[in-house]
Figure 1: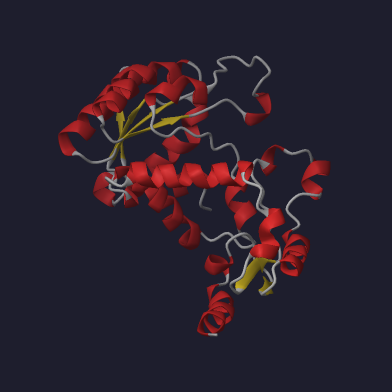
Figure 2: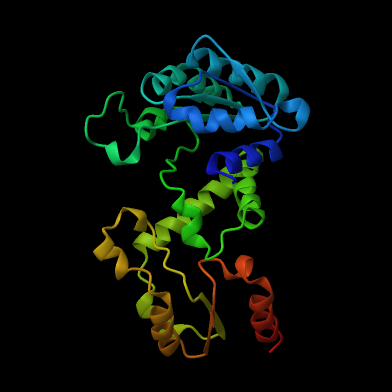
Amino acid sequence: MSTVADSLLAVLVQAGVRRIYGVVGDSLNSFSDAVRRSGGAAAGGVDWVHVHNEEGAAFAASAEAQLTGTLAVCAGSCGPGNTHLIQGVMDAHRSGAPVLALASHIPSRQIGTGYFQETKPEALFEQTSHFCETVAHAGYVEAYFVHPDPKVWEPLADVLVRVTLSPDYPRWARAAALTFQMIYQQPVRYEYRLIAPPVLLVVGAQDHVVPLGQYATPVEAARLGDFVTLSAAAAQDIPRATRVVIPDCGHVPHLEQPVTFLARLLPFLAG
């Protein structure tokens, strides 16, 4: 059975990564085991390059990236494994070298408890990274799809990796930041009645994805993201709205049910 670590490794292979510099550790075991099972670069997988410490791993990745101009990867376990990465990752950041640092974390249920070797990775790497994010739940993928299929969502992750290597990445990142800023700051609901053109609202019947919803309590989560009901109310307010609810589908109907999606979209555009 494929794991999240396997999927992450598959995306790295697609991005051209052939080796990962690092030191194995308990919190990194699932990923380093995925590297082992990949069979190495000669078999189409990834080589694990063991180093003296994580600082050496980050400097090695930085050097490879600067010499080749391609994405290089280093990895460290939680606690001191994270902090040892900092020097080399900072070197890569200030040199403009494309380096991905995989910093594993303590068990999520122990975060904030003073757990042995607990750090705050996002705070640690904030000044050393163009992008820093914590992936805390395998359920992120499951939340977007009713029927998660790696063939569908792995290319999406591949795009997010490859775009960081593009000269257009600063423009892309700014557009993404402004979009999220709009979500949180711009009041648009009251303007629905002013929308003049025809509007097609496409909703996945099982879509309940909301920003930061993974941190909500079960009681709070139960009332969030009822997009079937919310879209019905929006369709009432938008003068020329057409609402389509696609069954057996989550947050991305154009990917999960593309045939049904196009069957509703193309006639709308033709009209």
